Image (cartoon, rainbow, N blue to C red; front, side, top):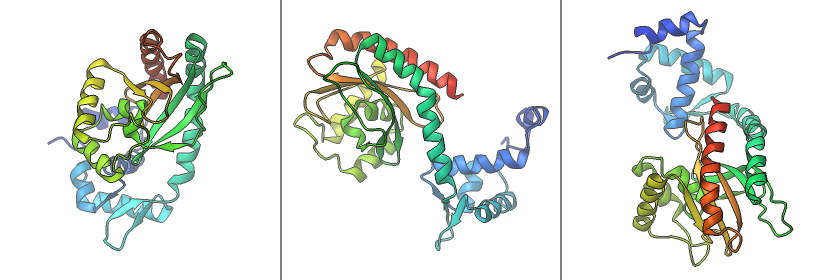
Length: 259
């Protein structure tokens, strides 16, 4: 088995002037985040491929700095020092996304949004509102459940089924409107369709009279989606059909900006 110490990968990183201990430390933080934010040393070692003594040394340093915290169970969780970094990163996401959202509004005339999966919830991190007097306005920072939103469906369609079921089990899939899907099997079938067609639609499932179309941002550092939303009377099938390729183009461009 190739470890992070072996093969050409390490040589390539060294040739780029990378500092191995920093790469490893950030790798551990990313591993923890990808596994729900809590892991033991042996789990970290198995997931990272690093030897236990190396893991222990890196973890102790991260604990001392406040980026990790050890629980009474002896497992490690992401620490509070990461919170301001995450908040700053979210603000930067809004800055990077804004030009793409503006272009969507210019092309389609409806509100454009950037949303992120944060734990079991969708949080809106950026919006450019429509210029219509009657428009959809989603407050940046607003949190909603993923099962009743186009952005949530677009993101979850690219996730492992087991992880999706765990989220749905924790949230309970409450009904927001008469159109909300509350059956996990029906929702799973919807996600299969979303994955096949490359976009998701929320047709009054979060708010009555509102239609939203969304696509996931590919290869993003977080689980992100872009969407366009408006009154159902204006968000016709023709508008949705026009929006999909524009959203996909914007998602690819934002992904490139974030890489």
